[in-house]
Amino acid sequence: MTNEAVLLDTSFFIRLLNDSDPLCKNADEYFQFFLDKKIQMMISTISIAEYCVGGVLSELPLNNLLILPFNFDHAKRAGELAKIVFSAKKKGQIDVYNRTIIPNDTNLFAQADSNVKIKYFLSSDKESLKIYNLLTTEIPLNFQFIHLNNSYHEYFGYLKF
Image 1 (spheres, helix red, strand yellow):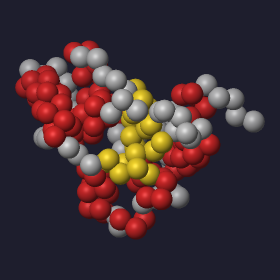
Image 2 (tube, rainbow, N blue to C red; image 1 turned 120 degrees about the horizontal axis):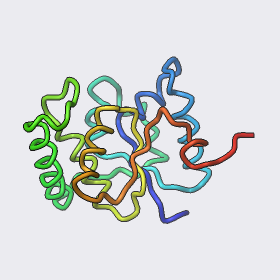
Image 3 (cartoon, rainbow, N blue to C red; image 1 turned 120 degrees about the vertical axis):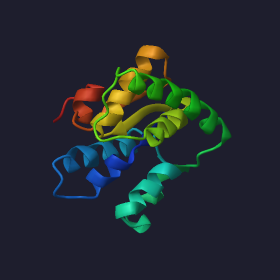
């Protein structure tokens, strides 16, 4: 197993588990890529809660995932990140469509940023990407945001044969 991990966002699982979703193929290929490359896949307890709003826990591929509980260190870092985002939103520096609250984004980012193994955060959420981009203009984060619109071939530079 490599020493790298990826934190998979709720939107990733929504796409992965819906065969009719246009991003299902990308999600499936990323999932297989991470398995093949032995990059540990993680899911936050926050994403589990979000998924269970519209889905059922047993649908998630938990056998292949490490569950990441939200802890004290994550909470502290999340507060720091949320403070930056709320301040920018108040000043009109970021327009996050249809989001009056931002905490789940910053909570997940705090988890990724606090875990030295997590090198990637994979999501199809464009609004979450806006928040990530804003944060990286203010402070360094210890992980990279991968948007599911980009195939793993594009992102990791693997040729598709």
